[in-house]
Length: 462
Image 1 (cartoon, rainbow, N blue to C red):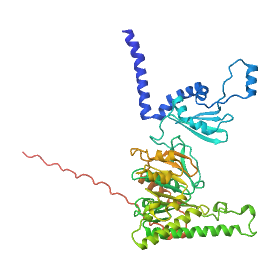
Image 2: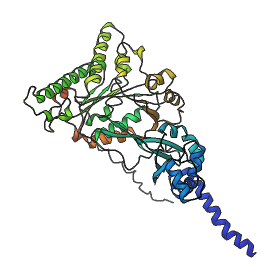
Image 3: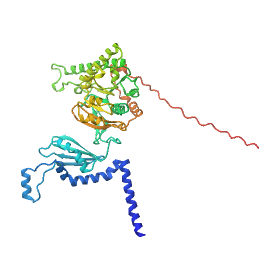
Image 4: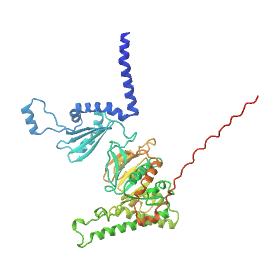
């Protein structure tokens, strides 16, 4: 009997602890990682670092000076030298290890062994980031951070830096318009493309920028954001006139820059600038972001007159994409498909869109349009996105780098509420006053539910 009591006293708590750990691993992976996964991974990493690096071919022969010192001071066996550990930092999603590469090594050597390191240390993934020449960072994640997206607390900040999604290494994916001026967002229906744009608009709405929308689906996607928009076009005719106004605004900004240069001689050499960022703050125009929803609607034509209008709009878009950056004017183009079959100028416009985000697509050709000039691996990964994972996408730029990202869920109502709360940030852009969407300021108060009818008791008669 005493043995049964002892077994119950020890077994019941152990079973409860094991069951709780198993439940947390599925339902609360961040809690499981912090409580169980992180200590285990840290011990495994520290105990097997040297042998793992040697097995992965990431060691080099020691220098002659090191060999002489080892022979003179100790009798230990002289082994190959792995990269030196500079820092180990635990995070809520994984482990960060900063390494100094050994002489003769390059980051590509570590990247090629990332999958083997993942299995050796028992983590979900290992990503390699180059911090500076000779220094790399191993970003390990203990679980699939893209299954349930939670943005990190610390994200890059700036007037034109907007955190939009989460990378698979646990860091934030941001749209930095100073670094990547123009972007292309592709994806099939229900792929999460609209949610990506909502997160982007909600982030931009909090910043001192002018937002301009072109939504030729009668405004059903962008009309809810009207309180924060400086201009909105809902059909091709309005879009054509709006693009003309934007080009005129861009030319005025270049004229302002030229006047400030004061060539020859009226402006100090250190104050001469070729973009609006070098202008004094009191003269600097507000940055402007043009959001084009379903760009194919601007290309589709049925008559000769519509074809002329299409060619004119595409020309204006190309002008904005080519020289708009210095004037502080940026493009964010969205569509299901974007290729040469849309018409003249489509390929030229796409070439100006540096940032690429490709969600789930219906055919490989669409993935090639967005990521074919970046990486074949990115194209293959974008064709393997399951319909059950909306918001999952491949993000890259024309420098060749790419990563898997997923946007957090943001409803249309929440995005519209953020735009209403920041409606006071709408800047005054006289050139766009004619296109400012009409916003009703009336507050609709729902009627109170009527009380149920009162029942009057009837006397009981015999």
